[in-house]
Image 1 (cartoon, helix red, strand yellow):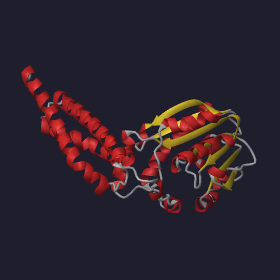
Image 2 (tube, rainbow, N blue to C red; image 1 turned 180 degrees about the vertical axis):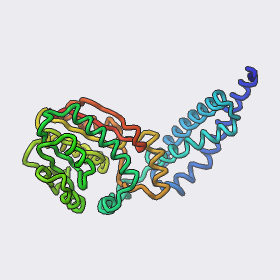
Image 3 (tube, helix red, strand yellow; image 1 turned 45 degrees about the vertical axis):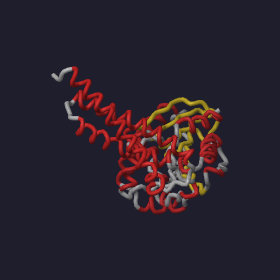
Amino acid sequence: MPSSRWRSTATASIAQSQIAGRIAAVIFNYAGARTAVFHSRQKHSAVFPKYIALVVCNALLSYALIRFMTSRFGLGPIPAKLTAEALLFFASFAIQRDFVFTRRSSETTATNWDEYYTKVPVTATLTRRYTGAVLIDTIRRFATPQDGLSIVEIGGANSCFLDRILSSIAPGSYDVVDTNEYGLRLLAKRPAGTGVLRLHHQSVLALDLPFKADLVFSIGLVEHFDPEQTRKAVLAHFDASRKGGLVIISFPTPTLLYLAARSIIEALGMWKFPDERPLQREEVVSAVRERGEVAFEKTLWPLVPTQHIVVARSR
């Protein structure tokens, strides 16, 4: 067992090394990250305080990880530091990109949904199974009536949930709203929708359905707009819902896991959603509460690019 003197000396050495390293990082990395990596044009007064806050948080997390690995697993300070920095690198990069050196929304291109529907990534087929299972469980738990349910899926062109819902829930009607004509044409060819499926070429931002549904849901839709449009999109779910009807909205949320996973996927050139804006829970819930009562929430951690689901009753 190491002596207490050795432990205190090592602890002090780790802390001093962390402080010295972070000071050097601030001096050399800030200018490079701002100009060469993220091409930020924001004022230093807006960016630098956020960068310093990130450096401090990163240093504290790194220090905690190093202490944990040296005390629990007996690693030396250098291997422990290398491991800690590797774990924090992708999350730190994503936070700098999305929250420190942010770009203007005008620089963001829209998702190419035709291309996405033509060749759906393998990873999407895996995550959809989990999301579909959560969705079915949520519908069975909260939706009424259970038989002959009228369902509206917003943003559901080439829906990956239609077949599973039809076989598990047996709704009386299933309406899909989307602006993507190619995805709607693909969906129209599905034999499973015969007799219950109706398609609507409309935007959620200008929704005009001649009926109210028992269940209105969207998976991965409201995050593709700016904040005001996101609010409008959320409220549109309630416009399409009957009084007391169920509204389900799922959206990505910027956990460290999401930020790290997205950074890796983007680095590999496999990210397909350039206009996706991970949403804080409060942004969506505040809009939901304008028209409904939140009945259930859950963060879907197994998806890795983390999603949050909100279930509400329409007022």
